[in-house]
Amino acid sequence: MNLSKSWDLHIDPDIFKILKRLPSRDAEAILDVIRFLPSNPFFGDIQKMKGEDNAWRRRVGSYRIFYKIKITEKVILVFRLERRTSSTY
Image (cartoon, rainbow, N blue to C red; front, side, top):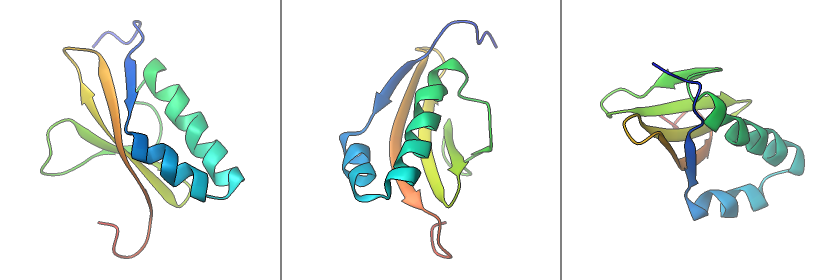
């Protein structure tokens, strides 16, 4: 897989609404990770989501960033952000 080209990043508008409600330290850490995704979406504490095609989750402290990777189009779609609890998944 060629990771030298940068990926396009698409973020669901609801993610920004969620980030506004979080403590600023947590929001900045999450934004830093999201900004880094286009350089290498397969780096870091990630795990492929079972039962879904090309859906991944990235752990950032007690939060989880869920995103889909469209390899043929070189697109990353961040579609969900959740705080990890005992009932998250």
